[in-house]
Image (cartoon, rainbow, N blue to C red):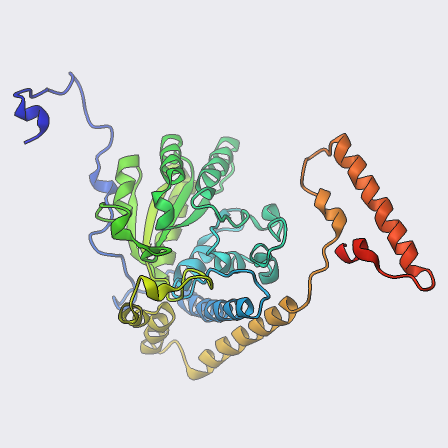
Amino acid sequence: MTVLEHTGYRPAPPPGWQPRTDPAPLLPEPEPYRLLGTGAEPATPGLWRELYRRLVLGRRYNEQATALTRQGRLAVYPSSAGQEACQTAAALALRPDDWLFPSYRDTLAVVARGVDPVQALSLLRGDRHSGYDPHRHRVAPLCTPLATQLPHAVGLAHAARLCGDEVAALALVGDGGTSEGDFHEALNFAAVWQAPVVFLVQNNGFAISVPLAKQTAAPSIAHKAVGYGMPGRLVDGNDAPAVHQVLTEALDRARSGGGPALIEALTYRLDAHTNADDASRYRDEEEVAAWRGHDPLRLLEEELRRRGELTDELVAEARTAAESFAAGLRERMHADPRPDAASLFDHVYAEPTAQLRAQHSRLRAELAAEAEAASAPGGGTGPGRDAA
């Protein structure tokens, strides 16, 4: 009995009132959507093998980036080991004109989208700016604050719709980010505006050290979509073909004017939150071992072998390509960056202010003077030249 019923008051709906939206079509699946092991066929020939190749490369990328952190070449690295299916499928589901809005854990998705891995890791190296040109790659800068990239994704998608561009935005966020106000604001605006944006929640079980059960009492994160008036989907985040299919369908729907969607991918972070985290303080090894048995790379490899679509030779080719990729990344990351001091003035304003122009002029003069002094007999490099 509700509080109102307890008082004896039973209000009737206003004349002509009808629910604005039937919630039934918006509800997610009762069980995570899967394709592996169901007998389903790829939407296009070779798609699952391409996903496998990317998963192999993605796993090696995570291993190499983690090693670079231990060697001091990265300040911090939030590994996505165990979540490679979500990240590679997300990048592959996007069209060239679409936009990707990543969080700090999504450098693999950024690399899979075509960004140079050294540039993708620049922010985590402690460098300034984002490291890559967002407009060229259609990839927003990596976002460290939780969920602040989500309203940006909605804004871009809404602007594209107003301009008549057939563009969709895909925003990635973790389960911890769904506890932020930006998550609510972004989904509410997206649904009201019917913006062509898809939200992919990679539910890896923990927001750093806080399990999902301590963040929300909802049946699933995907169920929250109903409250905003958009469809929710629940997918096995370690089933790369399933993630790819669900994202492709949601993005196609968004581009065609169907509005936004919220997709929750159930996955697991095999490594610690970052290299500065001790995951053993909040989870036990038995849990991690159980999820290793549901490894996305292993699941897809076993499925392809059962189908006779993956041979030892193809596995060796994928691993060789991944090792070559890692070697190139390692070699370039071991080279000390030599930033151009004058680039500090780039991308500050579309039209530099008088103060910035004056400062830029003084810097050029100082650098020129130091270069001249260094080229003179007995001259040194000077601290300013080193900084450049």
